[in-house]
Image (cartoon, rainbow, N blue to C red; front, side):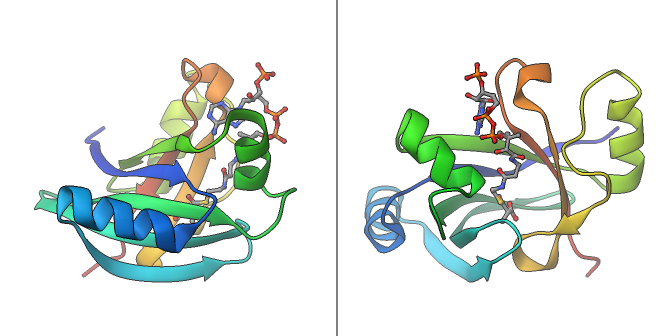
Amino acid sequence: MFMRIDHIGIACRDLEEKIELFSRTFELTVVAREVNEEQGVKEAMLHIADGEGGGSYIQLLEPLSGDSPVGKFLAKRGEGVHHVAFGVPDIAEAMTTIGEKGVRLLDERPRHGSMGSQIAFLHPKDVGGMLTELVQAPKP
Ligand code: MC0
């Protein structure tokens, strides 16, 4: 199964402040902004590089409410790395293959993600404490 790093998701209390910090520090550019009500986040994607199968990004995430996944994470752990997202060519196939290895899927079917992608999460307790996301980029 071919995988690449699609993005690293960072939990933030103030999205605009962290966009300014990451843009200034690493000279990255915001290429997309979105409010994803289903996931309970307001987010920005900062482009790092392009590679085989798609780009790689830093994803900054501000929660829409305290009881959303990122809101609960901030209350418990504070700001920082929230998840790592692997890009896969076929998300349904990746979910089946990984699920058969005994890793719990947090989504029964792919959901809507950043920039038109399809996404699904794996339970952090089954992946060494790392909340893991699978991403299938939209077809060009
Ligand atoms: C919770 N845990 C984590 C974690 N969040 N471990 C590592 N990284 C994280 N981000 C740990 C907790 O500390 C706890 O461990 C255990 O997992 C269960 O957590 P909980 O607090 O009891 O349960 P919940 O209700 O907070 O659920 C956690 C869970 C949830 C990961 C299942 O957040 C979830 O379903 N997340 C997937 C969706 C998501 O995160 N959406 C936001 C990004 P202990 O040892 O204390 O028991 S949306 C996104 O990123 C989209 C827009 C995109 O990329 O396109």
